[in-house]
Structures are given as structure tokens and as C-alpha cells.
Amino acid sequence: MKKILKDKSFQLSILLTLIFLGTGITFLLLGLAHYSWVIFILLPVVLGVALGAMPNKKYILWGALITTAIVLICLVIPGLSGLLCIVMTLPIVVPLIFLGHIITHLVRRYGQIKDTNRLSVLLLPLVPFFIAAPVEQFLKTDNEVINEVRTEQVFNYTPEQVYDAIKSVDTLDAKKPYLMYFDLPIPTKCVLEKEEVGGLRICYFKAGESSTHDFGSGKIIEKITKMERGKVLKMDVIDYKLVGRNWLGFKEAIYYFDKVGDNSCKLTRITTYTSVLTPRLYWQPLEELGIEQEHEYVFNNLTNDLERMYGQ
Image 1: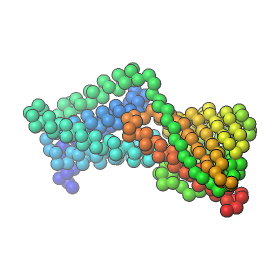
Image 2 (image 1 turned 45 degrees about the vertical axis):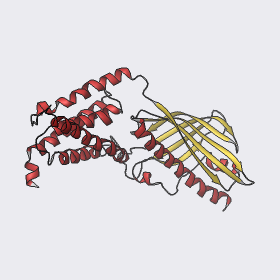
Image 3 (image 1 turned 90 degrees about the horizontal axis):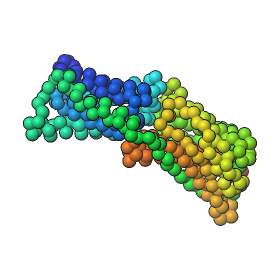
Image 4 (image 1 turned 180 degrees about the vertical axis):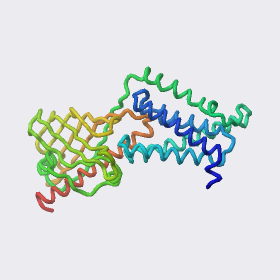
């Protein structure tokens, strides 16, 4: 262990990782970069390129990966990020650090670069990040992507009974999907102020089980645009305040109640949301998973409420 800690390349890999990641985090906090490919792809790749240029390859990746994990986890402590966000970020960041390292290795094979421990040289791969971040800020005018998540479930109750049970919920308490044991926001109640078009429905959330500084807690305020008992409940989201979730927004919430057979109802829950995260190929499935688990929790609670109100 002492040998590793005294290794100059190991020490330098820690310093480089702190500088590169610290730069990216600072750009995000100051609004100088988007939650985009510049942060999630370019930055880890150029970090890997810098690491690959060092002479002693034995310990540098260990130093970089351990430092990366520590830096990201440290964002959870002051509430700058959630543990779930960190867990979802590592699978894209870590392989790209390896990719950058491999790129340097391949270039070295053709004699295009030489090994170095000079910090000034190792920081040169950070230059593309300094260029790409403001260029993207200038060129990318529309940051939000609109997406829709739909969940369906059949309940052995009439559409009217399901409607009455879901329109306003005093307390949500049901089996939690696994992401809520991280810091996925947990709905606690939904209050319907007026049962009419134009009325407000306010849904309150508490922080997930592993959250710090109430990360993820808050409320979503919905305005009813269409309602028909046992048929449809449609709402526009007019305001939302969820601590720390500044990359995610909400536009619309819809419930459709379709009669199935004589006394059953197929409930369809649709959430329309916005996101600024890219690359979409990576982030969209994870966003949808999170919202699907929110739906699952609401449906689990609805099952309990229906049994309590109308029996099995």
C-alpha cells in the first residue's frame, strides 16, 4: 500500500482527476455547461487521455477511479446531487475514462506522443472541454426534450370507484419500488382543492430513503383541464419544486379510466416530462424507469385504498 501511495503517477492521477472533475462540476454550478455530452462523454474521455499519457500505468487507473467515485459521492453530502444520480452516472463515466486511456495507448503505439509526468502537458486534453462547453451553450438554444411515460393496470373495481380513490389521496403508504430506497422522491399525498376544471391538485413528495438535505422533496402543482368521473382526469403541471431536480421538469399528468368487463377498470397513467440530460440514448431509459417506479408506488397505494374502501 505504501508503495502505491508513494507512486508519483498514482498521486498525479488523483490530482488530475480532481482538476478535471472539479472543472466540470464548477462549470455546471455556474451554468457554464449543460448536463450534456460535454460533461458526461467529453470530460471523462479527455481525463482518460491525460491519464494514459503518464509513464507508470500500473496504478493510475486505480487512482482515477477511486477519486472519481469519492468526488461524486461527496456531492451527495451537501445535497448537490442524489445517491441515485451518482449510481446512474458511474456506468457512463467510468468506461469512457477507460476509452480515453485506450485512445492514448493506441496513439502511443504509432509514436505520436511520449510518456510524461509534467502537469502542464497532462492538462492539455482539458482544452477541448473549455472550447466545447461555451460553444454548446451558444449553439444549443432548446435544451429541453419532451417525453411521455405510460403505465397501465387493471383493477377489479368500477371506473367510478377507481376515479374516486385516485383523485385525492390523503396518505400514500404502500410497498416501495427499489429505487425509492435510494433517493427517488416518494409521494406522500395529493390534495384536490376543487373538483372542477380549473381546480388545483397538489402532490407532495418527501425525500427518498438515502437522501440528504431533503434532496428530491417538494411538491407538484397541477391544474385540472379535463375531468369526467370514471372517464378521465387530465391536468397541466403549472409549478413544481423538487429539491435538486433542476434537470427534470413536468408538463402534464393524465389518468384514463376504461371499463373492462362488468366491474373492472383499466387505469392508464401518463406523465409528460421534460429533461435536459444528454446523451438521450443513455438517460431516457433511466428517466422512464424512475417515473415508472413512481407510477408503481401510486398504483400499489391505490390497490390498498380500494381494498380498504370497497373490500376485496
